[in-house]
Each structure stands twice: as C-alpha cells, then as structure tokens.
Amino acid sequence: MVENALIRRLKALTGFRAFFVTLLLGSFFLFDIRYFTLPYSNAISYFIVFQYLLTIFYSIFIHRIKNLYLFAYTQLILDVLSEIVLIYLTGGIESWFSFTLILTVLSSSIVLNKNAGYITASLSGILYGTLIDLQFYNLLPITYEKTVLENEFLYNIFIHILSLYVTAYLGGYISHRLERTVLKLEEKDSHLKDLELFNTEVIESLPSGLFTTDTAGVALIFNRAAEEITGKKKGEVIGLGIETALPFLKFPFKYIRREEVLEFKSEDRKIIGITISVLKDTRGQETGFIGVFQDLTQLQKLEAEMKQKEKWAAIGELSANIAHEIRNPLASLRGSIEMLREDRIPASHKSELMDIALKEMERLNGIITDFLTYSSPRSLDLQRIDLHLLLNETLELLGNIEQSKHNISIKKEFNGPLYIDVDPQKFKQVFWNLGINAIEAMQGGGELTVSTENSPGSIKIIFSDTGAGISPSDIEKIFYPFFTTKEAGTGLGLAIAFRIIEEHNGRIRVRSDPGIYTAFEIILPSSI
Image 1 (spheres, rainbow, N blue to C red):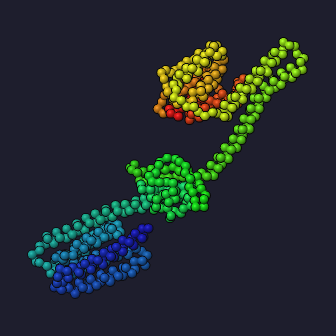
Image 2 (image 1 turned 60 degrees about the horizontal axis):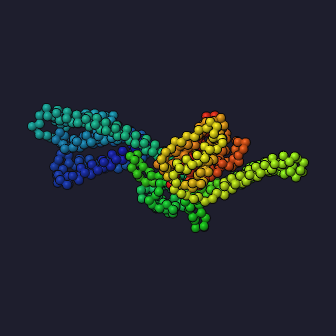
Image 3 (image 1 turned 120 degrees about the vertical axis):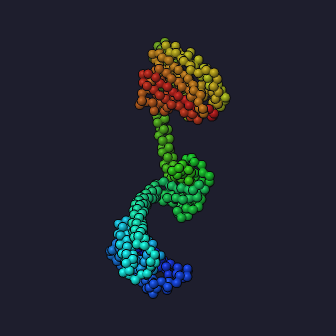
C-alpha cells in the first residue's frame, strides 16, 4: 500500500519535471526571449535535452528499482544539482530560475516526508550560497552588475535560504497532515467496505423478502429471499417500480401491515404478508421506503389444518361434556321411572319420585336450551338503547332473587344515560349471567359493584364482586363450554356471554385475587 503510493508520487514528480522543462523551453519562444544572447546559451540547450533524457530514464526504471526511497532521494538531489546548474547558466544572482529550488524542496516534502524537505533545503541552501559566493569573488566566470554590493549578496543568500527552510517546514506540515488524513480516509474506507459487506451479507441472508425504494417507489435493493418469493431476478426489478415484482403495491404506499395475494402465470398463487415503512437518514429526512414480506401460503395452510383439528377436538370435548351433563339427569329419570313401574313403593313416595322426574326433565331442557343458545346464536337485533337503563333493569331482577337477600349489597357506579347500539335481549342475558355468578361466589355475603366507563372509541362495563375469587389454574378455562366449579350449573353461562360479546366486536377480560375479589370487564366499541 505505502509502496504503491510512493510510486504514484514519483510518477507525478516525473510528469511535473517533464512539464516544467517543456514550459521552460516553450516560454522562450512564447515571450520571444533570445536565450542565445545569455551566457552559455548552447549549454542551456544541452541542459534541456539532459532533463528530457533523465525523465525518460526515470519513467523506464521506476518499476524496476527495489529501493524506491533511494531512487526518490537520487532524483531530488539530481534536481537540486540541475537547478544550480540552470541558475549558473542564466546569470547566478541575476538568474530568474532560483525559485526552482523552492519547488524541489516542496516536492521533497510531498513525495517523501518533512525530513526529506529539510535535507533538500539544506543542500539547496549550501549549493546556492556557494554559487553566489564564488560569483561574488569572481571565481566563476559569471558576469553581474558591479553596482550590486556585498551586503546585497549576503541578503540574497539569506532570503533564499530562509525561503527554502520555510518552504520545507510548510511543505512538511502539509504533507504530514495530508498523510494522516489519507490514512484516516483509508481506514474509514476499509471500515465502510467491511460494513457494506456485512450489511450485504445480512440482507442477502434474511429469510424474509426485503426491498428498498427511493421516494418515487423505484427499487434500489431486492434481496435473495425476495427473488425466491416473487420469482423475479434482482436485475429485472432494480431501477424499476417495485410493482414490477409485487403488482399489488401501488405508489404511494400504505404504511401498514397487510396481507396480499401474489398471482403467477402458472395460475399458482401465494399469500404475502408485507409491512412497509419510511426510510429516513440521520437528519430525519425521508429518503425512501423499506418493505419486508414473507410467503404465508404454507403457514396459512398449517393454521387451517390446526384450526380444523382444534375444531374436531373441541367438538369431541363438547360432545363428551354434553353426554356427561345429560347422563346424570337421565340416570335420575331412569331410577325414578323404574321404581314407579315396579309399583312397590308407598303412594306417598310416588309423588316425590314424580317431582324428581319433572325436575330432571326441566334440567335436561335447560341444558339443551343453553347449548342451543351457545351453538346456534340468533342474528343480532341491534337497537340504540340506554345501557344504564338496561343495567338497572337487570340489577333490579338480581336484587329480587333469593341468594341476593343474604348479606349481599349491589352498588351502582354510573349515572345519566349512556347510549350504545347493541342487542338488548342478548346483553340482558350477559349481565344476568355475570350477576348470577357474582352472587353465587359470595356465599357468606359481600358486595357486587357494577360500573361503566365511557372512553374515546370504547365503552367499559365492569362487574366486580368480593366473593371467593377464581384460582389462577381455572381463570383461563372459565369461558370454555361446560367448564364449571359449581355443583349445580351447566358451565355454559360465561361461554354464552363470551360469544355474545364477540358478536358485538367486543372483548371480555377477567381479574381475580382468590378470597378477595373478582372483576369481569366488558369492552365494547362505541359504535358496532
């Protein structure tokens, strides 16, 4: 990496040298400078030719030299010597080309480092000072204006040496900062490439289809799972609207979770679950959209099969519960009828047996009636009613039953009208079933509290009692048909209430602390 960078800088130096020599030669013609009138004019021609030959030599051997640093120092030293020769040939202290030494010092700092800049500055200063001194003492055959004084010579040398070292310092500083910046950029670039590779691997390894688009809905990313689900290759989708792969996605998108059907030419179809969200940059500005989708076809088939199995299992369990509920009164009926048929019992007992038979028949009729209510609900007869009025009617009936007369109080926490669209007969049955359960749970007395809450979008009705409560193991089963912990009862009351509330698009929740309280909370939408 470092070696390649040095080769690039050396090539740039070689190119700059060729450009400068060409500019030097061309400028004489451009400005009509009669360089043949200069001292050693033929030598200047040889100098230019020599520089071209050096440039060609450098270009040929730059990839063959093993010690590039030695090669670079050799070039820079030869450049300094060449510039001293050029200054000598063009008048010494009166030469126009003393600035070329500054260029070489700057090149040293950029091509190598700040130390090379100082070395080149020192060499240039020594050679330039020596040249000027020799010229002043007429040890070199270079003419100059005799009006130039000794202190002017010294000042010229001082200014040039100072300029060379300042250039070395500034060039070294800039070169050092540039190197640090390049290293940081290369490190960042390496991290970004690793991160990009990681992101690509993660995106391609996702089991779900993933795509991103710009703000116009044009696809930018389309991963492997997306190809498998849609049957479209990445190249067929990227750069085009995402509806190319997912025809049901029409721009502008809806940012919700939904299910769609993807149809193919072979008349196959897939059920796709898709979620679309907005993509934002670090400043929070929208840059496009991201979509994640899955093929739900097999999953829905499995769910349908599971539901079918659960349905048959529920039917089997329900049948067993019905048989169990019916068997007990039938056994009582059979025993009573057999005893009456044998006619061996006193006449006073026959009336008791007949009463038992009639009660068991009534019990059978109640079981069948409740089961039909649960299994074959009639259609809703929605009416706009005052919910509080319906609760008052139900609670008044509950207050008149025998069980509620034993140290049980009924408390209302609602007032004024509260209108809602429900089937009043069905909800009267829900309130009755919840009220009866609460009263039966308070065998030793207690308080039944009925309250309502009117929130935006929903209405709550809460039946809370201070009875025996429900154990945690039973609380998940209380809405199952025929599940009951009471000696008498079919176990269909809460199941019927649950079904009626579901028909009204509502839900019911239960909270209980055994021995302290139980609360049933009905939540209904404000409009059905």
